[in-house]
Image 1 (spheres, rainbow, N blue to C red):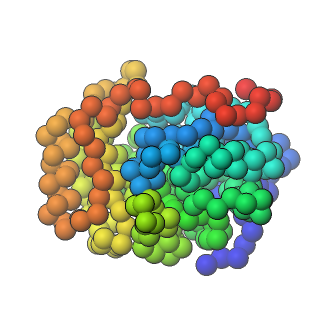
Image 2 (image 1 turned 45 degrees about the vertical axis):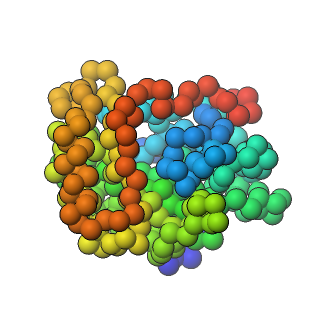
Length: 306
């Protein structure tokens, strides 16, 4: 693993490797500076069961994103940049407040482009008494060096595996290299957290959960991605097989609709044939806007740069 300290200058945190000097005011693909910007910090109950638990996951939603997903559910903050800048000390205090509110863990949502601040803020919170697991909730578009730098900071990786097909990755998320990048990043995550570890209450304290969001009309893409993951890791990782795709307005076909019952059943049957034994599946009716939290600055100190 690399010992290089992740940095905003020049920035190579995500696979775009923009190389901009974010501490000098330059902006890359993520459109963010070198101070974390967040849109919500509150208990969240809609993650996988061993992450949400009964108390809820202490979710901190970061603004900005390195991907250009046309169907993004969090587009107000990922593409629009809505949020408030908070310093690293304030971020550490937010983690501690969420712990005091009963959070099962600290869940960092879309944190890739703020990894240097994540590392420092988690260290500060732990020095002040934080003992909860830290969940890194990511699109998997990190450089290997960025993932390696998270060893000792992150306990649980909650990672996407969006595409096996580079053409789809280019068309829907503007990142044709996504399959190669994500598979390498996930491999480094597994090196850091090589197997799932649950506590006495069944809460995940270490390990890698990989989410595969089934897109309508693209069952083959998800099945091929699942096959590639299973070949590499078998049941050493946990699979989250998701049917909750919610179409934003004005999507092109087939993204204009939700996933059909038969499409999802085909995906689940394929997972069963592969031999997957440790997976989360979703019930019908998950493709609802109500599952998307309101980005209303709940739990965020009011400041600048809304």
